[in-house]
Image (cartoon, rainbow, N blue to C red; front, side, top):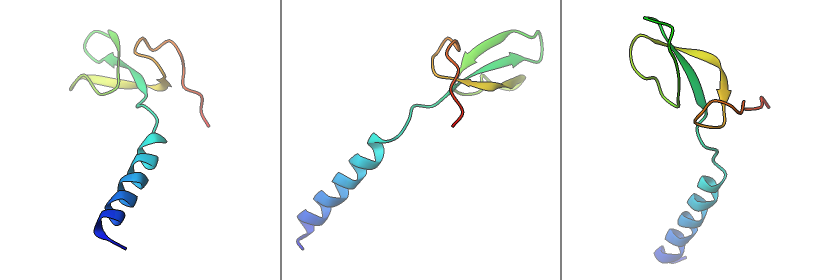
Length: 67
């Protein structure tokens, strides 16, 4: 098998693997300072705690179903 065919096969496997990935969940984060709540995929920084529920949207309105 030629190097080109191996490379093509590797690229095809990579595309199939990436196409099955899901987007990251959104979470509500509460400030330890003043209890303000915000929605983000990552921590806003120190002084914030993540609330338990995961969401599908950036407004944290549609809960993610647990599988």
